[in-house]
Image (cartoon, rainbow, N blue to C red):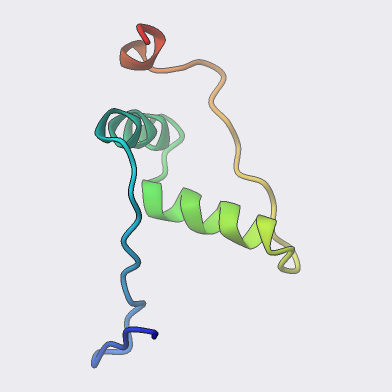
Length: 69
């Protein structure tokens, strides 16, 4: 069942993600001048083959916290 909102905003969709991966992804998003939501939506549109959708850019390097794993 789809959750609806009363203010015409996009409903939230909870997902399960390891906390360390979520934090690293947030760091990467900031490095790219974006945010997690924008990157996830961009990827989803690309995967769904929406017209004009492009695969999100990857950073040229990994943030320091991620390189230790």
